Length: 99
View (cartoon, rainbow, N blue to C red):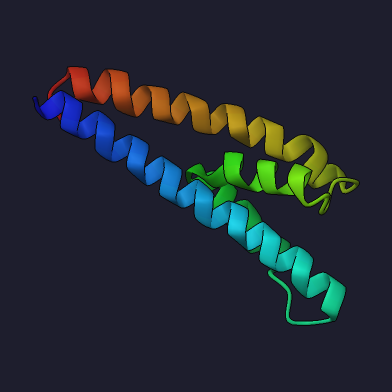
């Protein structure tokens, strides 16, 4: 029972964090078109590193924002793989060991 709860919490955290990341990319695209305050790239990468890479990558593709920058073009797919490994580790190894 606790394993299912742990998996559901991990998945909910992942989905919520990636939705926030996706919306942040939308805001940055919106701000760039209207000369408003932008989200620094450093914060986007910190968010991506903290299990938000899928949302940022999806936002990058959907909103066609920052697609030509090599940091985003090559760095985000690598962070998506890193995030997938971390989620896999959290769900299968920690849940199986009783944490």
